[in-house]
Image 1: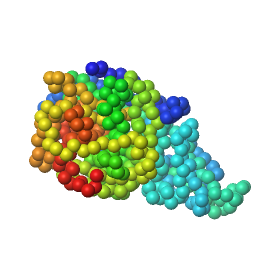
Image 2: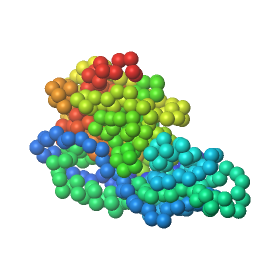
Image 3: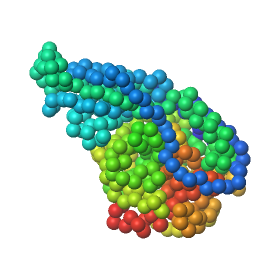
Image 4: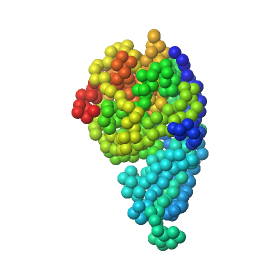
Amino acid sequence: MRRRALLTAGICTLLALTGVGVAAATTFGPARPRMASVTPERIEPGAVAAGVLEAVTGGTIERAASRAFTYPGADYVKVHFAQLRLDPGDRVLISDATGTEQYAYTAADLQEHGNWSMSVSGDRAVVRVEKAGGDPLGIKSRLAGLGVTVDKVARGQTPAERRAALEAKARLPHLESICGRSNETENAACYKSSDPVAYANAKPVARILIDGVELCTAWRVGSQNRMLTNAHCLTSTREARGTEVWFNYECARCEGGATLRPTKVMGDQVLATDDILDYTLFSVRNFEVIQRFGYLQVDDRAPVRGEELYIPQHPRGAPTVITVQDNTERNGNCAVSNPSYDGYDTDTDMSYYCDTDGGSSGSPVISRRTNKVIALHHFGGCPNSGVRMDRIAADLRGLI
């Protein structure tokens, strides 16, 4: 089987779904070759930092005016409003540099999400205040002090910041969750023809952006409006409503290049969560726009040692990759190492040496035998491990 993945992914740029309109250059560089595994040590999970909070001074924008917020090299920009002084019917428009990606809000819409906008892809966000009508010279607006004030921005890391983060991780080999001689993850597009089932089952897997600066992975479970991730990523409705869920965020070609324009929705209600089994089940807003990406089904049985696996995921927030191979296994395929492995409690998990990384938390571990999800990935450390879905499914009967 081919070996490409992040090793040759090169540069991914954000591309509109029409195939035109490159929005920003976003580098997802070659995966770092790493040392052979060290003494196995379970790595306590946590959402991975993906961005930086930037304070904004003088960020007031009057009605009928606009302002651009630019952070060269960032792969997204997300705007926060300190004040929203608007008449009924006024709207705030946030768009990327080209206007291809745009979101419109009333003051009430923004307040519902803690005064945060949806992120726009690329390194520039343009904020425009659109007045509902009247006041053609803007005199009323000025006298009443109408407009909005931006006080901070969450933006993605620059390529230099991502390299620095990887270099810092390289100095801590015990934190490595890539097991064996080399990184076996490959861009999802590599499997479009050679393994169409695995490729299709990567479509319901989403990158989630939490509070503008942290990353995990989540996936649609069942045909209803249900998403599953780890409890160490989010646990409350407040957190869910501050979480963006990105579908279709993948490189257009196996060798890298442009990424497809992601489809983004906001999280909504947390329906169930458990710290020991490390899961959170939640819903999203605007469910109808992400239904076309399909869903995964649960395999609610005990896993079997040696059972082959694959894991669609967003390591470090990168476009979707899939782990199929494992060079530590005799046949070279990712597989169950220990079907009864301790997680936060005895025998809650199963272990494997399939490659994952920070940001992969919440990924579905899929059985090759059934093409259903048999575990919810949450720990690194070689072996890596996921909570068994037969344990989680017993908790979620009637909800999925």
